[in-house]
Image (cartoon, rainbow over the protein chains, first blue to last red):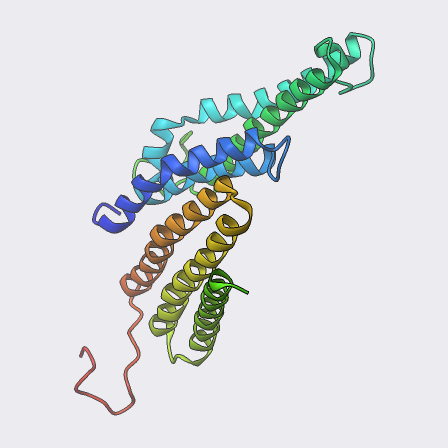
Length: 147
Length: 112
């Protein structure tokens, strides 16, 4: 893919807007269309399109497997942690009320935390799926290596 | 019914026309490369025309500048990505060895 000038130029041009749009979808998911799942997929799409054009190895340099593994677990921890925190504070699971004194603000904060949890997990798992289906196809991949 | 309404109608009709010709072209064209031609170009122009119509409508009646900015961003992104995507698809097919269609019996125009 080293000679694909048009593709490389367009991808370099489009990755920052894709990332910003992903963050926009995540942060506006509370009020408008969007949310954690969609935003996570869009954020992951930026990395996947980078990997498609510049090669999986280049993508793994900027987003190593350890990082995606960490975020895949961290998102679930954030989601469940928000719920369990409410549970420990004496309310129902994901009840949001103990997060802040103001109920509206508590619901906003709780929703944002849950959305970011979903975002981290979905984005990291999307990149992991791409990593797995391209396993062994990159020039630097060993047939039985960690990748 | 003022001038802006007429402009909106004209742009919407143009967009629908280009989308329709693109769809007809995809069915009618003989092979892969010539089918990509209406798929890539007409859709870009159709989306742009419809977005211009919506842009006029949004700004004229509601002054929703946020919505207008989003529509402009959609136009810009479609303009950059749609041709790049069709370029990537056609180049992948060409590098994979797919021969462009030539008229049967027309030896002069073929590559061989």
